[in-house]
Image 1 (cartoon, rainbow, N blue to C red):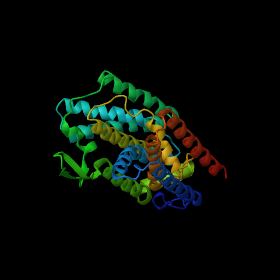
Image 2 (cartoon, helix red, strand yellow):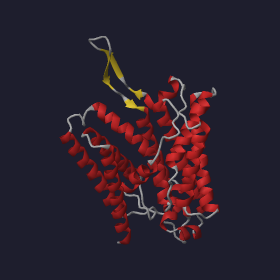
Image 3 (cartoon, rainbow, N blue to C red):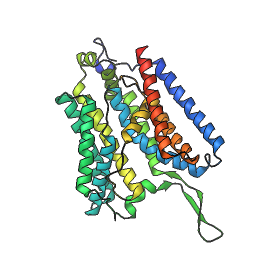
Length: 339
């Protein structure tokens, strides 16, 4: 956190031993889940299932990265699930009217960023609590997504729209004995590559840039950061814009995988994003968090869901288990803050 004797650009990042312990505890939990599910299902450690897990985790990771930046400032963003749906259908509608797919997706991502900017402005200018501001945006964005689509899926988008969500790098396919294609190596899905690239970029932003240091300073002590010269409102708005952009990207990737624009997509995704961040060591009190921890948290959620599915656990029981995991991690975070 920046002090009165330091310039904001020289603010030191917090080195929290408990944060490191939480991160390594999450990593240990991830390893235990892998071992447990590999023992209960012979198909768990297969190549195809690994690709499935990575794809499922990537969507959690996109919005989890944004959630991490927001939570570090001691904020919260409950709107990302609805924002990703709005961004996805905006991109799909743009393709329907003839906009090239890359530009249509850019429009969708910018729509998500606009929602994030509105969140930031409401929080900083109207002084509303982040919980209330983003809860309102959650309703507004979902309503807009349903209104502009007539509550119906946007279809007829063409194969090019599905290239980002369904394509893979280095996929190897040969002709089988029966004449049908045989997959030798499924390749690395584009969404997974994008997840890795984004994680590296956001980690560098948090750890190596003035903006990232200011996020930590605000979360640690907002008033001290303000007195140190940090432009608190601008930094907060930047955090919510980043969260909105990543939610918009997530929406475009999800709709690309489905090759349709689904206005009901993304329900409760904000809980996954927050859970991934907190499981990975990001403190809801602000000032503590890392991208590597969030990625670990996202994989814990993805592997937990995948393993439970493979073992025939009903979706209702899965909801209970995921809910208990969220409660437990937040409780542990609260205990850590009290100490």
